[in-house]
Image (cartoon, rainbow, N blue to C red):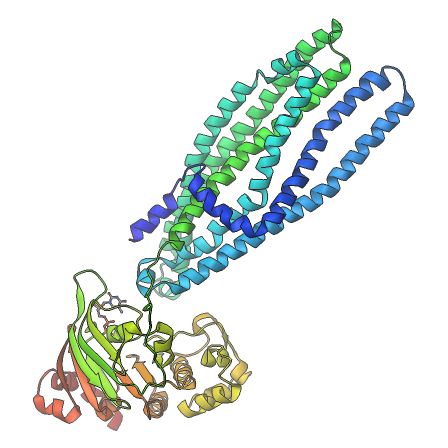
Length: 597
Ligand code: TTP
Ligand code: MG
């Protein structure tokens, strides 16, 4: 699947795909007014340009030739007025087209983010973050160019070219044909250029993706890079990726460097032809010198839009490839689906039952096998077992982060597949092995920005779990800024905050995935007390590593390689002398000795 995503960045895309274009244009629909307005203004600007050489022709033939100063002045003023008018219109044009582009990509970005939020966790297990970020940033940005300049400008470029041709043929048909005789060369050159640029564009894109993900991964794991003194060798690897990227960029620039002077050359040849052929005609008086002037200006004028069109082609091409990737993401419907007719799920008591539950992350690799257990409202159940036994997976399916393969999970007698996900999750709070904090403040991390959780509630929750002591010691207390991922806090502090978060939501069902990492005894005790307070009056599943949590549990489930091997309370299980007894001997006894020491 990750290869699949690599392939996404290799999408070369057709230069034009009418299906994709249609779908893209549907985003422009709400702004139809702006588009029509922009196109109209564009046509106005475009039509003014070719009038100027014609005015020059009149100036040369009618006024300069006859020494008519007044007429010359009028033409001069007309030229000036048309330039000023064009400048004003151009201001509106640029502003509106950019405005349009920004509006459309804003909508798309929002849609994409909202879509990504709905995707099941399974999707994220398989998708590198860097690539998703690229969709929402780079790919969307390349659509901006299409919407802001692309669509509107293509219209006007084509319009300008036809308009100029019209003027030229109106002035002199033969000279027009001579001038346009260079066009086949131009078209062939453009064709070659487009093909080459297309290929090199794919290389650039591929190497950029590689560069981005390398950068992302290594910044995230910077401490590991530094402690293992890997800076030099990592730099070496990076340099090789970096130089690949540079090479592919230079290669694509090479094509531009060849193309633009070639166009310039062809246009000079065209001017040369006009002077040679047209000049001869002036001498033989078949055309006026003004027509010659006008033609030279027209030639320069129509080469620009033709050159621009090949650039528009690149914009189009990039946008097509980007939109294909974006739509592929939008079409990914890997959701955890709600039932069409969800059952009412109010005021639950918190009874949980697993019935013949089978679950797998990967096809045919069951992680949980035929799990059966029942938790009465208010009870605390501890799940113990070796690492990889499937403890966290039990949480993942109870919260419907993942759907099970077969069997049923009931909460208050209702199959969780039959109730609304939101309703189910409303009653569950979760404290995970690795605490995740968002950038924001301490209080926003406790309330998760829920407006129903007042400042008082936040403080009370923090006090109850004993987080208040360290929070009050911070310079800004509850308003202390928390960095991304809570980087400025210790592991124990982050845990306490996550306890306060769970408590502030006052859930019916509490799930605790205890961290295995040991913390200092003082914090350990604090956390222990916090847990005890959290458990009161709720149904709780605790994946336990702390002896006291386990001993006080109403029931202990011993998980082994995805199967329930033993259940009972602490004393019962010890008496059995089975897996729990062994685990206890190996692991928990140390803890007890350490504690009493
Ligand atoms: P877990 O349920 O994560 O095992 P655990 O919680 O009992 O282990 P620990 O004490 O270390 O926290 O994993 C069970 C198996 O499922 C394991 O082989 C890894 C696999 N797995 C996935 O493939 N994808 C996942 O997202 C998770 C969480 C686990
Ligand atoms: Mg786990």
